[in-house]
Length: 456
Image 1 (cartoon, rainbow, N blue to C red):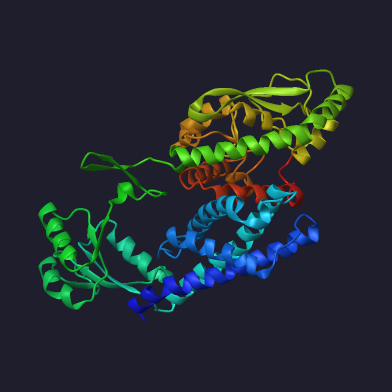
Image 2 (cartoon, rainbow, N blue to C red):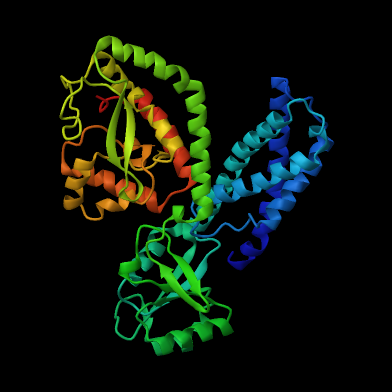
């Protein structure tokens, strides 16, 4: 089953998505009724809502699950559809017009629908991958030109069966291997009989030959993709800029360079940090401040210069956990460090000493999630030892980060630890998504509860 599946899948997906949305809405209705914040509605009242969901999902073409899409892409599509749906529901759906808890009801609908539809859609994505990995719903592909990074692409096709790409071989004048079907000139003779869906062109092919392959593909309704060289095979997705009719590749573009992504991250930071400040820091700072003052002389806060976004220096706030000393900026805390006070040991072990950094988030110096900021002397040392170290300063530093939830928190004892931190920070910067942030926050809570080994 090759192209027939591509014809039927949108209809199957849309029908099942409609039924899943109806079931999710009914579960949400039951949940809200049990909490006493919704009077409930008859089954017939939810049919228009599911039809509205169907309309929005269809217009947004959520059924288009790309072969190489990851699960976060599916969840991003769901989030967009959910936002549109909730906005329309709040305006149009009659049972919500006279509710006493209107916004709570909408939030409840959104939360339940988001969780249940997220499970459903990721499940569909997983089933689709499994179906393709068994040799179904495949696309035939060849590579014109062998060398450079093209063998790596062929290896990807072999390893990732779930992409559903049936690699038929190379066409190249120089290569001689069991996957070479013939020279480039023979491509134009054999291609019409291969039932091709995709043609991958090696970047070093002559421009005239590239044009000829593209012209052939256009005449036969075959998609063409160019394979970038090794210098462009980076740990991220490439993007493009258009200058009139001329396109250039944005080699070091990152997700947070885009205004919408930056806005979403900053908006979440402000909302979350504001809630923490109002409901936790408002009483935690006076309480901890009294305990710190009772044990030792000195300020409540330990203010340390650290490097932030674009290497700009900012004042990083922490509860003071040590007796005042001259080595705070240059000497890391070690296990059983004599400088740490008794209340300081508790604060460090519970990570409560980091809580004032939510104020740094409100001031715009930090983010909830991002690379952890190091002291200025540490940065001066590490940037001479580690290639691309300063790239971790492309975005705001975070209270927590990917490196911290992967086990690289606390004292840096060897070069492997800092190199691993930088590598994970680099991955985070180039692969940022809102869902990655949420995942890191959940894992941070798990680390705080179950893994205190490196907290001292």
